[in-house]
Length: 219
Image (cartoon, rainbow, N blue to C red; front, side, top):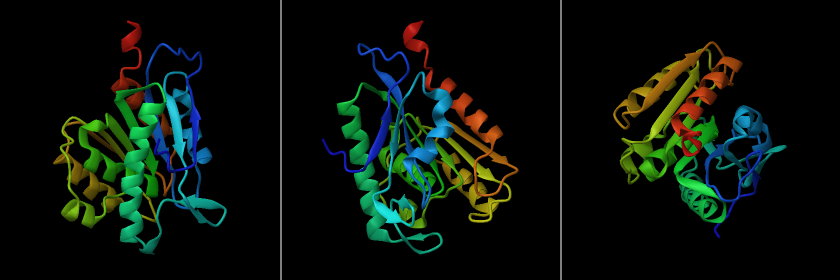
């Protein structure tokens, strides 16, 4: 098993070992950790397997998946390795746990959103969908990576209207790019800074429930 990151896994309440479940992999922001992401997806804990992946590089009291040369410019070698290792992690977790491989989601904030969008582009329809909160796609990913078709991948992108780290125009440009990538794009903005407000959380939780059709197997 290639579980190459520290992680926290939470199985659904009333877990049934005869079933497989949709999964949400969470990717945190720079200097944070997997525990800080759980609150965003905890309303889904009864129906999804939730796996919080911790960055493997220490940053202050938190972690990151890669470092930066400057804002918006990842250290390329670290970024490339993170994309490879996270893709491998997702596949290994699917083998190890009772995950429905057709309903795999990523949810990331900031650095985690950047990686979630990149993974959607390189894994394509092997992912059912992503939730990307306040992020962007590096230019080198668009021009140099080997991208897979993601026409059937559901993509939720949201951005803070007053984001002081990645200005709103970056969210607009990112959404415009994904309009060319998938037929299943939702883009929303919220009156927040570089963070996730309650309205945003409610909206993407409802979107995830609907997109995963979590009660389909029980009907």
